Length: 81
Image 1 (cartoon, helix red, strand yellow):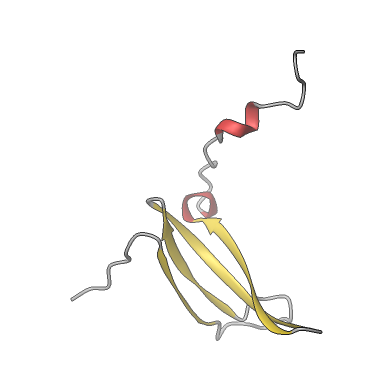
Image 2 (cartoon, rainbow, N blue to C red):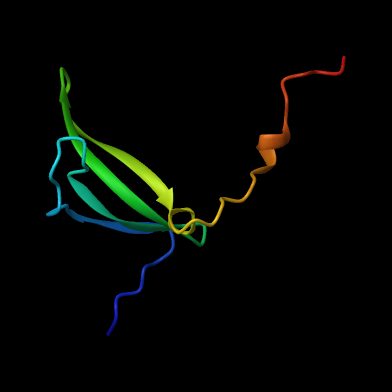
């Protein structure tokens, strides 16, 4: 049976192709609100311990298709009163 991604879930795998420090430690994908995303993760350390830093990129946007405009993009901070 083929793997089927479930809504609001994702998977990460060790990045075996990492050649530079800035490359993510793990990569994978996620399905959020019916849209597929590439997921990148970096393991970071600080005064309070280790944590994962995540980045998401729409799979369509990675192929050159522009991302749809969000409703809040048209709003301004001008208040008419």
